[in-house]
Amino acid sequence: MSDGTELGRFLRARRGQIRPQDVGLPVGTGIRRTPGLRREELATLAGVSVDYYTRLERGRETRPSPAVVAALGEVLRLSDDALHRLHELVALAAGQAPTPSPGPARAVREPVRALLETLRPSPAYVVSRTNDLLAANRPGLRLHSGITDWPRERRNITRYMFLHPMGRRLYRDWEEMAAHSVAHLRAIAGADPDIPELAQLVGELVVKSPEFARLWERYEVRARGGGQKHFQHPEVGSMSLTFEVMAIFRTDGQRLVVYQAPTGTADHDAMLLLDMASPEEAALVDGAER
Image 1 (spheres, helix red, strand yellow):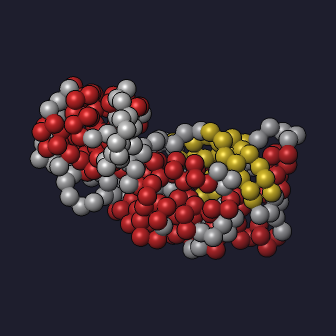
Image 2 (image 1 turned 135 degrees about the vertical axis):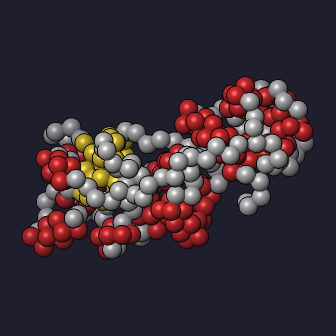
């Protein structure tokens, strides 16, 4: 959709995901031509006129008050991350342009690289703000089976998930992981959705992956933190690993991702297998992470 503003597109997308019964409205017996809430329903629930809300969605009203923004967030049942995104889009629509973002920092400091090695056999790697894979220890790189088939500049965790032949097979709960990954990109877009590396990645994935395009239009927003992932790895089999995501100080959005499993479990044994490699494999992995 190219009409209106990013704020209007966000509101339309999120309005379409709220069912009448979610907000206490009667479902009725007729066929609803509009997915989710109608404009007049949302306007009434938020305490604004239908005309005002329509102008807001169509980009002709760009300065809603904090009270209106809060009411919209409540009716749309936005998470904290999504509400933060709504405030960013309101500021952008009002012409409060953010400070241009610097280019992505791709160099990983040597102490951070050394830390990756101390974390073995736990898979660990460093990604950029848009999930480019910048450095990894051996199990961290081997975790993403086949990613070294691509040149370094194309090694991106989100691109791998949607476009690499192994991307869909690696994650046992691919649909959930894919939705989280796209919601993360929406979160980092913030008030500056056209940062070059983000625009390039999203543009490629929207064209090449219908699944990504569908999820991108949902405007789900989520900052990535820790959790658990379930893998079906072609070399070590099934494993479930907890993970933590930590920001690296004094970088432009670099994050350290570390996976773990309790000692003595089959999942920990799978991690040990990932850390084992022939000399030829070790040379490939160690050379690829630099």
